[in-house]
Structures are given as structure tokens and as C-alpha cells.
Image (cartoon, rainbow, N blue to C red):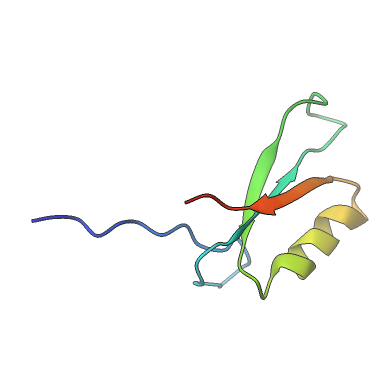
Length: 67
């Protein structure tokens, strides 16, 4: 039996929507400048997750998520 394709979900707490954005970030106090961590976001949570990371000066880029 074939397994259904797994869907990447939004990183917002409790959200079960498919991710359409990749928020690339790092913490400059503990990561090298070229290191990127990724949170995934749906359209609804893109701004709130971006704002959270930006307030801490962690957000580096927001790009479309490639599944």
C-alpha cells in the first residue's frame, strides 16, 4: 500500500495548515553568520512568526517553501 505524501505543516503552535513559506533565521549570539534555521509558515501565520523573529533580530529571509 502506498503511503500518502507527507505535508510540511506551519510551525505556529497548534496550526495544522500546510506550510507555504520558509522563514530563515539564526541567532547571531550562538550561530555563525552563514547558519540558517527554518520555521515553516502558512499564509495566516507568516506575519506573526516573522514579527517574532524580527523583534529578536533573528529573521534573515522569507522565501516560498518548496515541498
